[in-house]
Image (cartoon, rainbow over all chains, first blue to last red; front, side, top):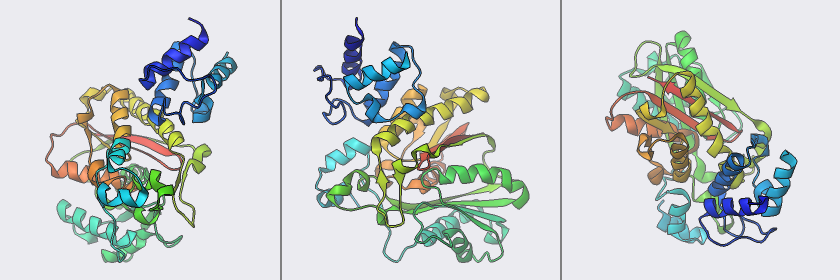
Length: 77
Length: 291
């Protein structure tokens, strides 16, 4: 599974919704995720991409779209 | 103030308030009430239940994030209401986590002052904007006060360990400026609280070789039912281990943990290891283990 497919699978898993967002669509404003599931998303990213997200990176904006998540993961490599 | 009364003023559905927070109703203070007057009533009730005369109190620690003025804070006024002129009274202007920090400090100070009266008192209804633009915070907060007595000699539990932390990097995410109303970046606060609180509890329990499942009760700041449920889930324990009354009082900031503790104590629940925990503006957070 490529990185984007993996991210989309995580969003479906934590958001509990079957539809995939557009790459730049706001996950929060579209209602796909809320404040709590956004936290779940970060935890799943940590698990599935074997990274540690420091508390200093905990801002919703960093994880608010597929493109932003991809950019964050790229920066963590 | 029930959701049915509040929702029309915020242009929202009462059911939405419950969905977002688990809150059904909250108390709002009367116009004549002050943070100090609510705190003094809680303090008097606490001392009566503890069987301690006010003159036996050696120190007052009063937390509030909603005091009416910059200074003096409510601590001295609470002391005056208890006729405790001469007894030192210290304000902790910490919202939400204030009573947790006060209890931690009192645990260290009661060897010097013998009986330390810890009070948390808040009138949050004067800090919110009761209008549609302020609905995200107006649905949450309520008014109230709680108190507990920390003694070097007597009590039903002993503080075993304390973990406190602060991080001013997110001070703007939850704040009450002098002109008000309260400003909260909900997603930022929830993300940090959802991670920091379970981690603090887990670290505290681990260094005391105690399993979360062995805790008799988690007495937590009553911020939001969803947040409390998430903390329980993160620790792998059932929600029932967390005492909750946020549905009836809303988020009473630094008073909430003391109000929860008082109701838990009065309900005659089984004793055992106790964890107190809170998270709030600052950011300030932590946990206390008592046995």
